Image (cartoon, rainbow, N blue to C red; front, side):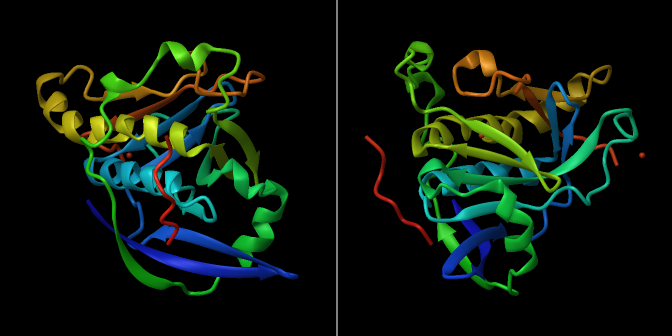
Amino acid sequence: MKLPITIHQARLGSTEFKVIRPARPLVHAVLIDHDRHLDTYLDQDAAQRIGGLWKLAASSPRSLVHLQMRGNRGPSRELPEDGTRQLDLVLLHHSLQFAPSRWKEVRGRLGPGRPQTVTLPGPGHTDEAVIDQEARHYKENRDLFHQHLHAETLFMTGSAKVFRDTAWHFFDVAQNGPGYVPVHPSYPHFCTELHSNDGISATRARSTSSTATSGTHDPDRQDPADHDV
């Protein structure tokens, strides 16, 4: 799949950071923090592109992948609600060792960016069936997501493998959501979950389940060679 992006640079002292954003805004994507869980509401296009950005994060260990969503209009049935807030999302590799406390300053120094189109493996490249689900629960498993919240942003920090193994959730929503909605009028939402019980999250202090929904966006998470862009 071909994914248009923009590449931004920001310098803090002697350190330069590379930030990747989708070239077109994800206007039909909303990430909501419910304190105990996270919900993501997506239309087909947003789900497809986020799946691509998820794969890009797997192969770009020296970059931060920034999905701007907190300013989008949320589903009317979800907000406002006590204890909820809308968030942006940053995907990054653990080897970058980026401190979320630096994000607000990095974000404020980003330039206009330069456009680029990257070519990524298609949605069918990673088959859910070949993922070793049992191995995820071994105590030796280090392919886990670590979540942090800072500056109205959720940081998903993980390995190339965990990003690659979980991208299919978003492609599943993009492929199956639109067909599901018309035949289920009483519950017009196609859902999938990234849950802490699945052995993909190191975070235990709060539930890490999230739900992606597609079809009717209601407006009223042996490694390949790095190809860091």
